[in-house]
Image: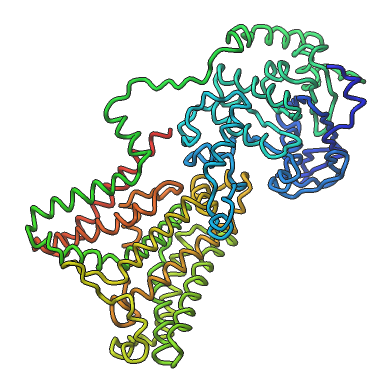
Length: 263
Length: 364
């Protein structure tokens, strides 16, 4: 990826000077973040570096004490994940936030159901289950997840990777501008992690930028275009994974090595 | 400084390389590995996908069993239709209870809510001279309000539904005593002043089978709620909240608002039950249906709805109520003491919850 190319573009999502204190504990101290169109931005940091607070602020789960967030150049504020989502910031949570006892279709449209047209939809409020099933099938096959046989299968009968697939398909289906993925491979086996990394590639190929938070260095280095290193509540640096080794990243993260002054 | 970073480097190098281990990108990863399942496992999976089957089987088996034990009297058209009449009120309460239990809650106050609503209907129309229909409407409003009150306490104060409804059960019961002064409203007075209150107790004879209008209304309530739960977003959200409330919230469902509406709908169903109960009993008695709370929970649990929420069907509760009715009727026709009816019912509850737990293991 050409970094200069990114620089010319306006970033999709910008966070400026975000600060958040929990009592006397400083979780974020004027932290910045930029996400450009069509990229995968890895976010790494040691435990306690404040990266999960940063992500929670971006997805609306935590309200920052100060600082601002710009989406497509416009200042946005949200006080809940639902509001962030309405603005186009979708999050795939580590626990996926799926309802296991409901079907794939039900889960994909949970909270955004399609109602039937005319009287039975408008007044009896009946769902258009056929249209939702078709749309869900289309979304899944777009992401190369056609191996899921029955769209009305219950989510609890799916494997971990398939569930991740459903969560990602849901996150990328509704006019999404940004997808945040929190530790998407943490709970998965080797094969399934592989599939999820491919999935991240599919989403990027569709032009949706992704913020990927992960503890798994090889995974981050494999799929990220740029890597944001978080340390002591703020952004330490952003590195190009092609120019640095994983060991360098770990050294920056832990403070063993001084961060590069310019990326 | 360099030493540390070299060490780290070495550690990372020694880790297995990801791509080498996995093979080509085009490998098929998501095949379903469903090997041969034992018969027991197959049954478990089948029941998991069809939770209503268990109560249906129990119902059929118990009807057959009591046919043998109690003989022809049990199978008479009169007796079978009497069972349906007897379960009408518990059935309607169970329908409301199902909505609450599906959200992983429980409502100990349904019967008290029902008696309170029936007191409003009877008191206003019989003793205070209000036209019957507005009195019934106020009874309905009482049901919705008491239900929503439970819902608000559960969501605003974040109290467990068990505790909230244990409290409101007593509060509603006290209100009933307050409004009635412990006096029943007599059936004859209702007949004279507000015969409409007895409407659902009217009987219709269909070839020896005697049904009350109330029994048909109960069936209609179950069908209506089935459509609501399965064909509308509201219904899907009931299941989502019971399944995983946090996930539902993150999916964009306003779970608190939903919960209040679920409790309110349950309250309305209970208030309809209040009207039916006046027809069934004849009078309005402040101390009636004292066991209705627990009976409704029994019917829901035997009907295969999980007390942990998110799993179960409304129709199962109808079968659950019928099973309870068949047991009571069969055992009493067979000449057993009431204490054995309760004994059998207790065993049935434990077996039903045991089966539910076993079925739920599939998802782990």
